[in-house]
Image (cartoon, rainbow, N blue to C red; front, side, top):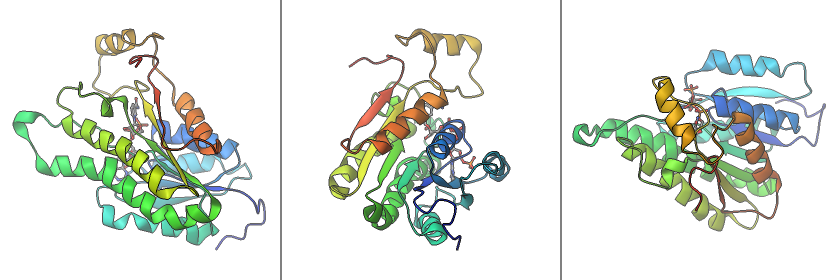
Amino acid sequence: MTQRILSPEAPVALVTGAASPLGSAISRKLAQEGFWLALHYGKSKAKTLRLQKEMVSTSIETFLVKADLSRPRQVHSIVDQTVGQWGRLDLLVNNAGLFAPTPFLHTDWIAWTRLWNVNSVSPFALAVAAKPPLKETHGSIVNITDIYGELPILKDHAAYSASKAALIFLTKFLAEEFAPEIRVNAVSPGVISFPEEYGAPEKKKLIQRTALKRQGTPEEIADAVWFLSSNRFITGQVLKMDGGRFVY
Ligand SMILES: NC(=O)c1ccc[n+]([C@@H]2O[C@H](COP(=O)([O-])OP(=O)(O)OC[C@H]3O[C@@H](n4cnc5c(N)ncnc54)[C@H](OP(=O)(O)O)[C@@H]3O)[C@@H](O)[C@H]2O)c1
């Protein structure tokens, strides 16, 4: 086990999907704020190692944890490994997510189950596994949801949208259940990055729908994660960050 010599009071965060665009911005922000980091990955080991390498010259300690989030029964091991490594956990960021179409006329139940497991069941299982160590540190959980979890408007993405809606519901449910020691909040991003298959006209159309006429940045989402995790009087909230696409 690592001796906590460099920074005995350093808080520890576990970030899932750490090498994704949002996950890496969140990890960098938390490192800047002094967190030691357990960087989770599923398939992207090389990318996650690159992110870890960036932090080598800082006083931040990091290590990698691997888990397939489509298998919720196994995910508690990454919480166990994190606490086993450093003896504490202060923040769980459920950032990993799976975005994939599920057309109504070709319902593929295996695809549905995978989406639900990655986007809502595993974040819930991780929250449950993280409850005892978070209770000790009076820590918090931040879930990354999606504005499409709030409105049924994304064609052919019923499973994705419903799984994010479930994560929004679970955020509020867990906030009640885990209080008063643990706070649970969520960030609900709009357009931050685009799926590879989106062309210029599709991107422009989505940007035009926002009041601010631009897409957001991963760093803006990371700032919000930091804000929600550090403000000790906020729980059960879902912060919509969509550039004013839905002002309601
Ligand atoms: N980007 C946006 O504009 C946007 C908008 C709204 C909401 N969001 C939400 O923000 C979060 C991050 O999005 P992103 O665009 O930065 O990420 P992304 O490029 O979609 O990457 C998804 C991440 O989730 C992990 N993941 C997916 N399936 C997994 C599995 N079965 N087991 C383990 N890990 C798995 C991947 O890890 P590996 O590659 O290591 O497998 C990857 O790090 C997601 O929850 C997404 O729904 C994003």
